[in-house]
Length: 68
Image (cartoon, rainbow, N blue to C red; front, side, top):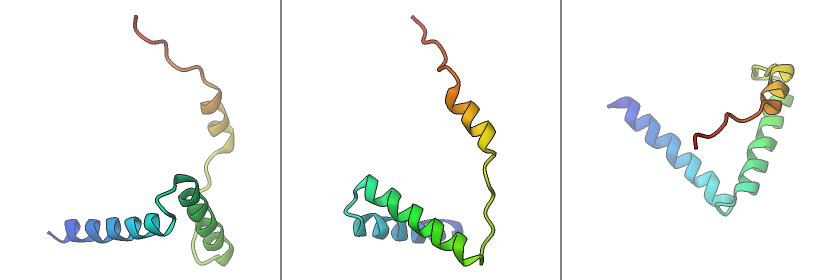
């Protein structure tokens, strides 16, 4: 199926990027942040901006109580 082939291509690219970053999570996140900044600066793409107010509220919410 074409969809599965496309997904495999995406996975291969993501794995290559991860390997280039030494499979290090911090380096990988920095890579994606840098690429995101470069793409935003190029103005070739439009990005949906998160609602910062709602994001802040979500971070301040108390976690649900755990069942005992």
